[in-house]
Image 1 (tube, protein in one colour):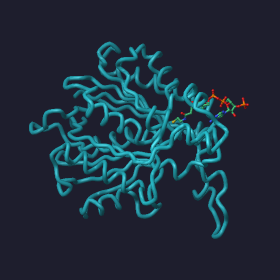
Image 2: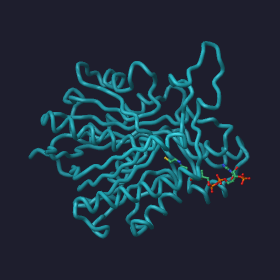
Image 3: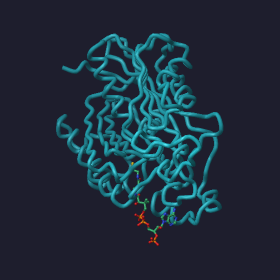
Image 4: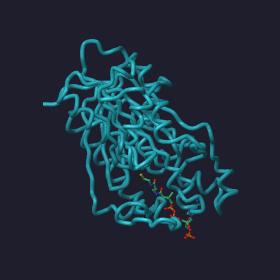
Length: 332
Ligand code: COA
């Protein structure tokens, strides 16, 4: 039996530096019309020197703690969903705990590409079930720009950097107003599709020798067309399943937050779910695809802007490399 959980604080952080479509026109053979019509993206935020997975996670975590009315010392577990940690060792979670000034906590990274936030949220729910007093920091952060080849026009227009954070605890009586109750999370993977979206270079399957120049496999490689088809099918399917499993109809959903990969995927998933456009929150236009951070940034922003109101039923959907995909229902 799962202990009921709440998200009692949210925060997000994106780098200051903007990379616009006009900037990209000067870097590769592309244009605003192509990027806008294929993806809806107008600009993305790119980490400056010194801005990293851990520094962005730290900023988002401080905001989530403030939003929850909690101090870092109260945290019991730290989870960081990312494919782009500052280092292989130490983990981003250990580095984040250190930056928050806390030691002795369980801290670990979770790798599920663009579905990272929901994989970490479900892990947090499991920890809360094991340890009902747990106060868990979940951050989902990617500095995708560190693994993008800015000479590859098919990839570099799509991605941006950012971080989101949520504080997850048991749904106790002291839950502050404005908390979101996590009703369910569904997750899925299919490793047989893994080759369609990869970053292999530097892994133990594709190691580099000292002094060797990085190859294109060090950067995101993707079969865009195939990923598009699977993303639409998988995300709409798992969103339908989570609604059916919990006895909700699509009409009872107040806000739908899909993975912010691109507007065409979002529109196609929205159409399959028969979700009116005014219920669908999007910010991909200004951030691009921030991978693991995408839905948590959108959730945090939608809540802060009042797009999500008290009492709203929020449906989240994700899809990413692996393949990984997921859905969740949160009642605010
Ligand atoms: N600017 C201009 N032309 C570009 C371009 C760019 N940035 N990137 C690719 N092209 C060209 C291609 O070279 C190709 O040219 P060709 O016909 O002469 O060979 C043409 O545009 C069509 O490319 P194609 O890949 O077939 O376009 P598409 O309609 O499939 O759109 C994506 C490309 C990437 C936008 C689309 O496939 C997509 O959204 N995929 C999902 C990607 C994604 O979101 N992944 C992350 C999920 S977690």
